[in-house]
Length: 326
Image (cartoon, rainbow, N blue to C red; front, side, top):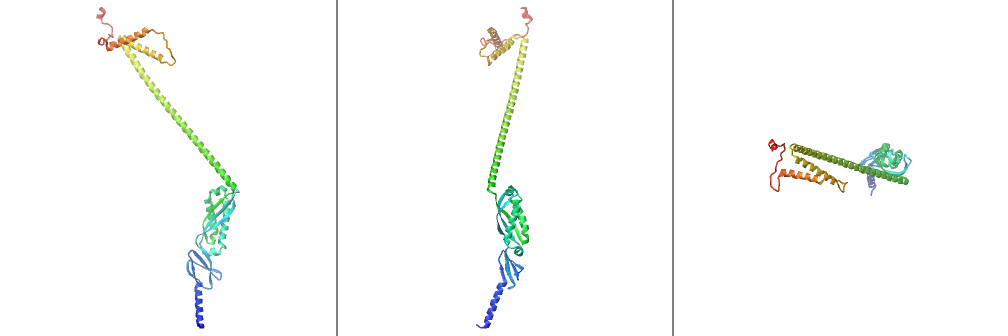
């Protein structure tokens, strides 16, 4: 091999080295910074890129995809002097590779420290009960504060979440007793409310029953009054008919009326609950005479069934002059 051949091989190898040092392929989701003599000049995006060989070099390789960083657990004192252990997680994305590379050193450590400091600030301004029941509010406040703080670094905080809030064991026991007392209180209130409702319903039922009973008594009294009124009307009509019969000279009708009342009075005496033995100083012939009057009325009205004679009408007025002469 001659000296000319060696020169040619050397030039070819040098050309290959120049090509490889000047052509850069950036993977998807990454941005590379380019430094010339140690100073930032440009940013290489995903794909094939060309730089000046021997003068330019790749500085930082920044991941432009969304990333997650764990916030380690730390103890925080709340507003009401309760100590709780808190940890969390943060999601961020680099949108400016140059600023994220040269505005802050050790980006991950800076994010962790900044987030932990703001967690202490936010939780320290709240009571324990608020911390346990308002996680969304804590996450929102942390996101707003941390995102504003890291904006000059070319970073966007998309989410900050509190993972665990662990109170001391004595506080957990106290909260358990408090929760049990609250549940017992609610159970007693519900039981009292149910008993009260039951008493109200029973009182309403008794009231309705009394109303219905009163309405029934009123209806019965009305029916009784109506019956007595009709009975009185019948009695009055019977008295009128007896009066008319007496006026016509028909004494048997009067005897029938008196006998009916007489026997009805005896029946009332017999049905009295306070009487076991009934002794009355009465004459049996008077009762028999009344019964004979009743029989006489029946014969005069319907006729004598033994003889088959038709019913005779007694004269209802005074006797004629002819009859008086005889």
